[in-house]
Length: 428
Ligand code: SF4
Ligand code: SF4
Image 1 (cartoon, rainbow, N blue to C red):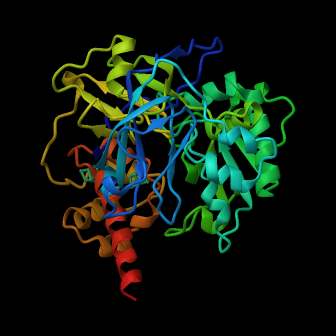
Image 2: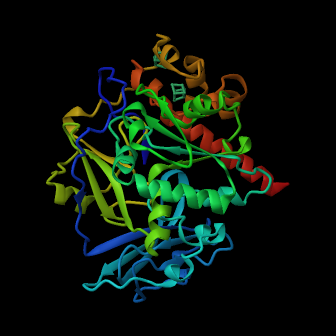
């Protein structure tokens, strides 16, 4: 997958989309004949070695494990028969097992979660909710060296045109409130802040969290900017939010927790924003594991040769090579770009125009940084040109007159440096 900004030649209007006062109807995508679930596996582990095999029968809500020491799993979003288990390499070398399931006509719900859902605990969240819609990051609460002191719930999506989490707040505020109560009880964290657009503040009423509003200018909904707004502190370069005791969750993740413990079933339908070729927005609900092809077909969106499919929003999304790709628990948006609107790729060098520096919220000397990134000199880029101060907003790529994929280079550099640091730790 290639990460880059997907707007064309002109500078876009950099305002987040606000969900309409009259809620758009949620289009319910039918259950497809086959779903594919992506299970994270450790590097080198063969899909054939997994306990789940072709021919196995599975129920909706059933946990399918990798048998790894780290206990990774996926939750089956359908009832049916496993038709294949194969290795799948994702973005930046992430290794998955792709588990395809032929869907049965009659749905059966797995009862394991219901038996333990009456009294929520952190262990139950860890054992069942990690793959729920919104992907609650429960594992962060198990790191004793970096205890979480503040949970920030994002009711705003961090990309233009995407309104998934605003929709969740408008439609499922009671589930969000129930999720917050469970989070407080199970994690012991009392400091919970919900971040929301001004237009939705009146929807909250009585809630066991502080509600803070942010403005509609991109990238004010990025985690770095939100942290600054909520805590008054900037994240020091090279630190993670967990280093400072902060955990981010989407509103959908928290509502999933509220829903699961409310009815004893792990939710398996994901809400997402679909952005069509004219930048029209639809909100849909689809089973996790549904292919993009099935969703586009049901929405009547035709994919022509050379049109581009983007997983995520227009600035920070990733382009995909195939519409067979499935919806995952953290997929908030998909976007289809007409081939005629795809900006041409250029191999022009940096002309030192300074547009990127003027727009960068982190004030990074990008014109210098990009030279080191293009040369693969990542350590120099980090040591001398503030690579780790980048908040990954993608604005530099958007305005670059030479159309240099700066954002893509930055992501690659951080990934490579992360890999090198892990390799060094293993060698020690
Ligand atoms: S370097 Fe680019 S992606 Fe990073 S913060 Fe600056 S403008 Fe955003
Ligand atoms: S916008 Fe592009 S061309 Fe202009 S200084 Fe930045 S990297 Fe160079």
